[in-house]
Length: 191
Image (cartoon, rainbow, N blue to C red; front, top):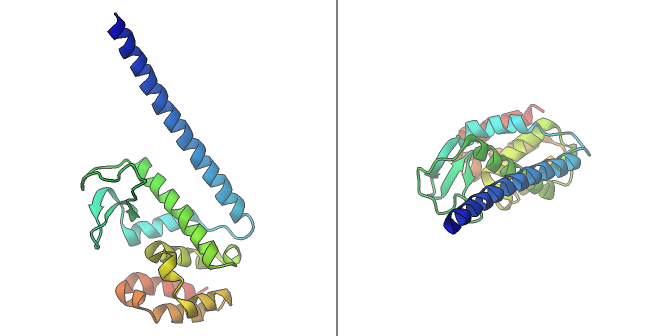
């Protein structure tokens, strides 16, 4: 009888922990969206769904763990698995849900937008199309690499989109991912 009571308490505890975990995940997502939207109210809003569609094309979308071209564990829409992720250490081929894919992407986009704001003081005033291009580049390269595009970034600060496209083409990045880079630069020069 005692064992039955202990098992019942364990089940209740497990259910409580699962509900608690989901509750805090929802709270964190809502909090993140609130603060992201609050910051974006200052200027033009970047269309996150449009960015998701573009990055799904550029990065691909795989709902299981795979090794990227450099051998790093990756999942979803180009999400590099971090040691803080629940998927860390899981075997290649381990599946994730569509909800988890979206959760990882949303977190990545928050980081990308934050990095864009750090690199570009006028980020909130840039047209949506310019924000889309820069966010795509940031997602692909990260802030450290993108910050080295001195002439490109200078042209962006001056709102000289055509010159920014010229400078973006004059890079090793453009040679490495030519199709993606050229498409982005063409979009930038038509703003």
